[in-house]
Length: 368
Image 1 (cartoon, rainbow, N blue to C red):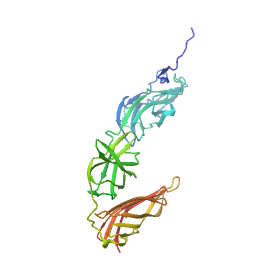
Image 2 (image 1 turned 60 degrees about the vertical axis):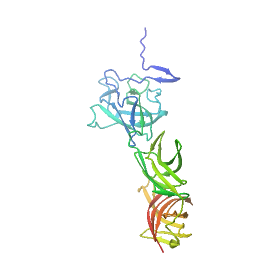
Image 3 (image 1 turned 90 degrees about the horizontal axis):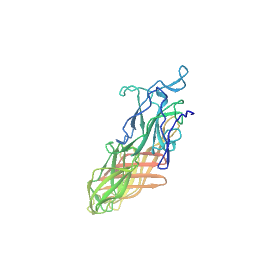
Image 4 (image 1 turned 120 degrees about the vertical axis):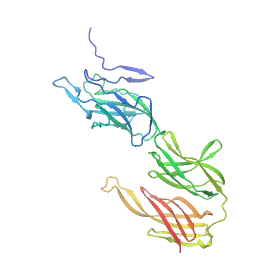
């Protein structure tokens, strides 16, 4: 009877063709998954989540002694995918692979001899399937790789250190925008923070704040009353929620500003700032806040260039406590300005983006 060498086992599971992982050449220690265990729940790390696998050196890639070719740490790697489905070569199906860790060249002294590590950088919570592999042309498998078992882990923001915090005014005024600032930590890919207010048994969105790096600010408006508010960051399918604050929105009356503030206002310090106040201290208009912007220049010697641009503020209403907040886009200049008028002095901050260029900072001005 003819001898038949079986190099792979093929099964059909749920309509998918699944190929069994390829084993090592006879006498060689295999590549195996070490940690985390399959099914583990792991706190998402924006810098990357670690997996470990065995990576013994001196295994045979092909041939028989004395003409064998041997492999080392440089021949290992790990694939990370959104599905456990295997391709015809025994590795995770490449169309589902979203990240890959290459060779771990150095034997770190916090790992046992013969172990390597790789990192998956997903940035969002999800179920990750991972598989270690090494080059092996002579292995009894369907492709040029020896593969370890496929494991999976669930990445979550719980315990990851991801958080969001928001600073709200002590009180706000009905019909007048108020300033909200937010900070995040270990969030990674989020670009907006949603502002929510409690309504009945649930929460309703009433505004949002854009993020630059790990911080951002913007205007928001709420109707009269006592409200419970919070800030929420969406990270994939999960939410990171700030602490709940109580915010009182009162009727607009008893202004601290008056006709004494009417007239031109100009800079205090080096930055160019000018605007006018009118209407008995209740309207700020014709504002200009000059900013130095950073512009990314990929592929150039310097990663950034600078430009000067003016952040416009055409018109904003001043609340009874002297505060104001305005956001808008005029001729490509996307601006957010907020501040407070106190007597003959005013101060605040401005943020400006123009195309890919961004900048901002604090400002001061005085009457006259």
